[in-house]
Length: 105
Image (cartoon, rainbow, N blue to C red; front, top):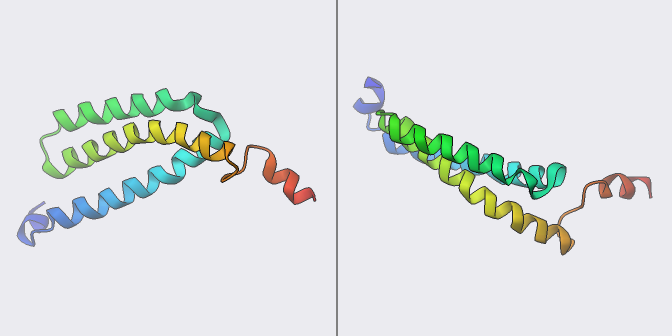
């Protein structure tokens, strides 16, 4: 932590980590909807609540901030799960099992 404070890297670490967390949630939402449908929304809610509680309890600024980012990314993921279902219905993304059928043709 001394190195981070000495070179004022807190913002850079938080920014990069936020980018990676959001980047992780994008494919996680797509794959979750593909394999499990929207019924896993409560897993996103549970993970978000756990991270939110962690953000409130952790005293380290960087870790607390990253828990908060993960919490609200997870909450955002709930809405995106349902939105992803609409994208699949519109044909923008394949339904489960369609990829195998397309490969057979």
